[in-house]
Image (cartoon, rainbow, N blue to C red):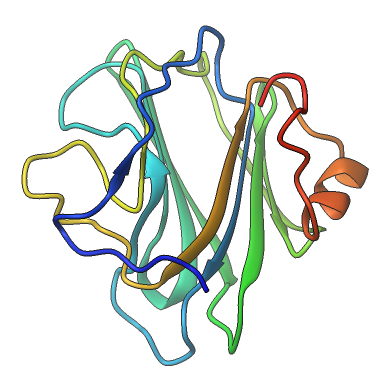
Length: 171
């Protein structure tokens, strides 16, 4: 079973990546019929800090990516609905100017991004964020989260739907 969260039990990973994050993967479950903001899957958002990355499920099952580097903030709201009857594998890759959303190993959507990708200055939290009170805790289930400092290929992401090798370089 996946882990469910409250404002008090988000998991602090503590890792600060030396290089910009390029791929985020997670297996999550957001039940059909949940229309409100579901919350943060993984991120290091803490308010007005620099170098932040946050991946969350926004309203009506949409994946939202927030990036901030040196005061330049950008938000990508993908339109695909990931609510379902069971777990869903979600991956986002960040190339120089494109964010690509994969759902269950298949490209679902792309969006333009601009500026430098953030190099995290704070550790990551699974199931919430670094803000006091953790208002955006995840209101679903999270089965796994993987962060990579390189862009995973479409084939690697397809394979990760079923298994992520914990010894993968850059994980």
